[in-house]
Length: 308
Image (cartoon, rainbow, N blue to C red; front, top):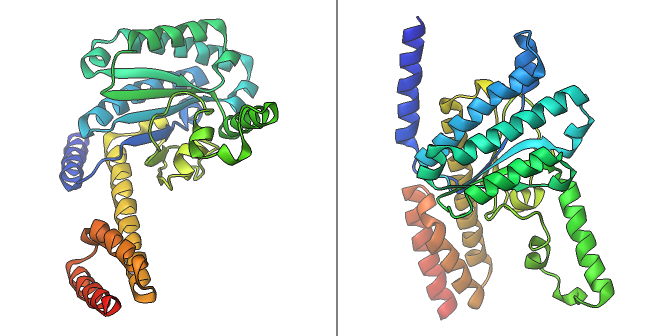
């Protein structure tokens, strides 16, 4: 029966891979459930984190296979400092081990993976900061896949720090209040992510994003995939389902944009119609063929009417 289940899972994975037609550029993962996985087996929390680290290596390979450009992993939040010292010290030791192991791994160098840490890393023990520096130096020249490790990270703390920096510069006269825009804030966020987040994945059964990358994910209306397996149990089939969720979200978004543009064509005239037509040309392929044909006929007729 185990062989049958393994065969069926492999067949389903291949089916999902064949069905996928698009890939998110930036995937962010909340790796939840390591401690519960360990408790379920009567192990210490450190054993759960170690098992989760093996899953992390697999996910990195899956991202490379499907063409993801950037992967961000929520490895240690600011709230994690409140955990028992014995647990946090064991986790810091594991982080040091894995960062150095990744930085020296042939597969990382062969695949051109660049490793970056994001967060208030100055709060981390010196041995962890040294491991971060080592991994970043060893992979600084790569750009095929960027791996961001969120350490001592908190989304609200990141935004608050950026707001304070902007306020300070305005008060000092170095920045005018009318000069503040999106780029102004982004330049003051933690250095690391280079793209907006397209997909957030959370394991372990909780359906919340836990203050993770609010600027890069929420501002981009990222798709979110929640699943019940603990992080050490996360399988490739779960990863492919998450990608499928992103595809469905993207398809729905494109249809919405096309239908909103059609509503503009019906309601407005002149230059606004031209703008709406440009949106329709960009997103009309997301609509079913019958609806697309009716839409084209209607917009052409509307354009001729407004032109007269």
